[in-house]
Image (cartoon, rainbow, N blue to C red):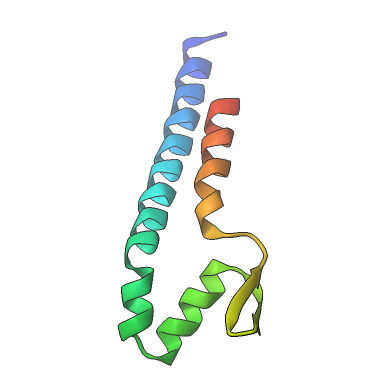
Length: 85
């Protein structure tokens, strides 16, 4: 391999790590503040929070049921992608 190839690969790794870090910070902030935003937000904010949590929202016996991918698992996926390469 040539130096340019190594530099390109390092750049790719740096970019993936930066994306993973940004996703981690956003998810952490969401986890920390979603309850407050939901309690104090308007209907648009509440709708956005519920849609970020998952899909196919249902209420059964006064309990909110959510199907789909939870945003908190995105950190794990990002970590796996970084460690794979």
